Amino acid sequence: MNKKIRDIILKKKKSKIVCLTAYSKSVAKILDKYCDIILVGDSMAHVLYGHKNTHKIKLDNIIQHAVSVKMGIKKSLLVVDMPKGTYNNPKDALKNARIVIKKTKCDAIKLENNRKNYEIIEYLVKKKISVMGHVGYTPQFKKKFKIEGQSKQEVKKLLKDVQLIEKAGAFSIVVECLAPNTAKLITNKVQIPTIGIGSSSYCDGQILVTDDMLGLSGFYPKFVKKYANLNTIIEKAVKKYTREVKLIKFPKRKNFLNGSKLS
Ligand code: KIV
Image (cartoon, rainbow, N blue to C red; front, side):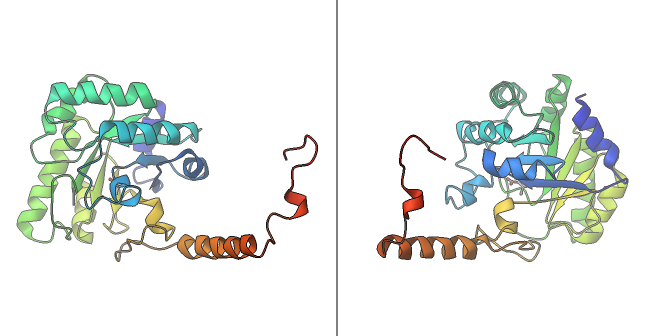
């Protein structure tokens, strides 16, 4: 097992695991100073490509962004989402996961749970591929964005899913939009770290979509805290630039290229 992955597992119950998403080198370079895990998520479907769900993201899209992200990372664990349709059976999953790992040099891949793919995780782990699971709201397989694990029956199902994913060999698991007590129960029942999104502070770590927490994406459900309002900052800057170009205040003489100096 990769040392970085061992360190993540060891953090369970000792210190919270910090995760965010990135789709480019410039953002990854900043996150890398603080995050334990950087995820190249298929949330890029909404954030970058304006799709209404994550289903149109292809292996090539995720690889292209992961290659860029990898260039910005020195220490964090790089996890790459496997797009919908790329892990329908063990053979396809292995072929596609190997392509992703070879091209992006990522440390692990993430698969969403559909209550049928435990043996795919087991097969990948047997083939020395590190896998992160994902339960609760799983956008590749569920249409409705809702709080998961509210009824006794749902809690039982979720706990079973998570235990089977752990047994299959996943090294950690994203738990998305779980009722707080369900997140607490699951976190206490498994040895692998739970990484929550919209699932309370009972999880072993937290992840958010970076563009959401920076106020760039326009998607702000209750579980997202906006740590910055980049939309406003960017708009202010673009407005100022527009005014200065029109008034011939930019570029100034100091911005002119004279002689051989570029910077
Ligand atoms: O695609 C993604 O960014 C994710 C996170 C929301 C966990 O899966």
